[in-house]
Length: 339
Image (cartoon, rainbow, N blue to C red; front, side, top):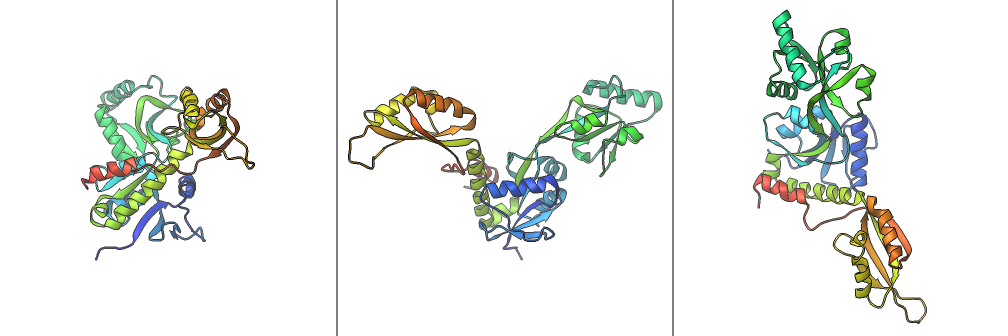
């Protein structure tokens, strides 16, 4: 019998779990989890959705196999755990947190091995001179093997490890490692450096869904649209401010003309201009101007408003910017061949 509930899986612990919860809350989809030891929670804004906390690897596999409908997890885990299988589809690939790269890293004492070509030569030399294979410690055997094969780095032996990888070359059970890198500080502290040309994958947190569930259960498809609506509206608004100012002019059209002469005052699709009605019955030639401005452009926008006679400038954060249709929802329908 087909499930009727909708399940969204989230990382169960660590920084990624904290960031996922903070992201959902910022999107207006806060998770209610009264007990941090509970692995099942609710999302009051989406009462039909159950939040389930799992390990990242289990999230990717669960979505792939269909026991979960949606999941928020790192792209690195998705690519590793769902290798060669399209049952788990990426709906949103830029949630804006959990950024890292998957890199080959070599120990500082391995002199003369700092590029992919040099690592290829080193592996060949190990085989020719000692009859041994290049030992690579990693938690990502599929992605690592694909990289080594594509660059003809052979022969090699993958050493799957679940603990700390950075110590592997020091204690002698691996020649190089393949691991996730964010700031690079951990590598430097352990006398390792990323291999030039050795970046395997750029990763961050993504939203994934089960392809069959999207196809066969209309309410899952509806939930996908809702999630993408909120995610995209929040991410679009996150980098913007609403700016309101009073500008003197003969008419709304004349004020618009002044604004169009200032590139920083274009807004999303143009400014909104309305009459200012004073509390006393006197004639006025003031107009209220509303525009949405990118955070990086705020200083220029304020300067431009002053240049056209703007006063009483008010700047407020934007919570959501909804478009007519979420771009990634349209892309999802195309990928699913749904009309």
